[in-house]
Image 1 (spheres, rainbow, N blue to C red):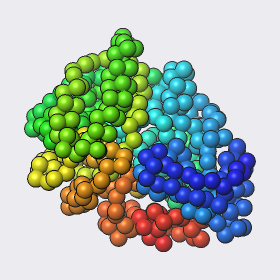
Image 2: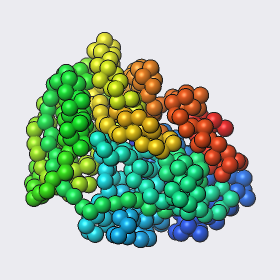
Image 3: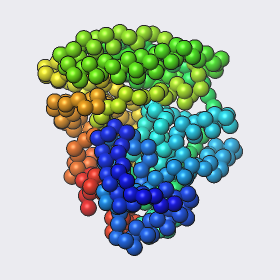
Image 4: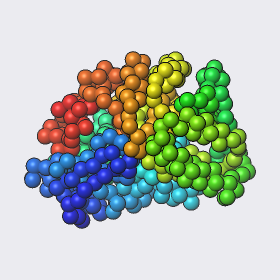
Length: 436
């Protein structure tokens, strides 16, 4: 189905485009026809999911924008093989509930579930994990429409090079139409959340990341306080938060009240340190046990912009200490906490964890807040430590830098040259980060 042209804006409101045409195909065959039609017209093609990337990775310019809302079917659930095959536009929230009803689960998740499966994997969405990696690392096979409209099934044994590139392909190789994930029997997670001092977290960082399956923490700039979260598998029984407590902590305080506090801080920057001090004390210690996806993910309604870098595991503590020193000696007023997560090394060509155990450090600004040099200076710190930027989050790196940061960057761009020589799937962002 082809829709009328219109303006596209991402979730954060910092990226927009006015494509010549918006299409919402209902099948792989219709998707292939849209790609062929765009080729005949000499137009580019970009697929967009829920718009949760902060970069312009999905911006179509004056090309054709593919929306996936009519491609959400579950094609196959194979309990014996431990796999589920779903179409590209299925939101993670629906996938989680479908799997749960079948007694199954993804192994790891990011901290939100609003993205489409193809959008999340193509940009490198990840959570935190000692042993388990990103969503793309859980892909077992995929189906992709190439620039000539042909459809390829790929896996480690069928078109393996295309599989290696496309499971985290930035939308640069084609339009993914279906993904097969590895899944496992459903499991419970026990979450233990507790405040800790910044210096204590860093002093104990190695142990915390080694003894917990999933460890993350938030540091509140202008304070010495952190909120830590440890998620570990549990034999049960389930002991979820009472409904009112969950609403109060994770929706009302974390979204409604926090939105108000951020607005005050944006209007009156001098109040930000006091707001940060109060916010850092608002999250008290608590424990609960629930279905895995309910522990991994939380509602995130306050809108912001974000930059995130993956640094080598061994550099993380030094980088975090220097980040705190940067904040303390600057005039910045940072209302959003810094988020820190971990991931094991993987073998995906463009994964931020390719070939090395990694720590993710994410900095945020409330929407409409002046940048003040915060992102720019933090980026300089990250790149001084061989940092790799998240593909869907703000950064200024180009192909020259990234070619040195990724051992298989040349393999990916060579594959792109073969499957999309005319750059049917290019846009300004991809020309910057991959070259042209």
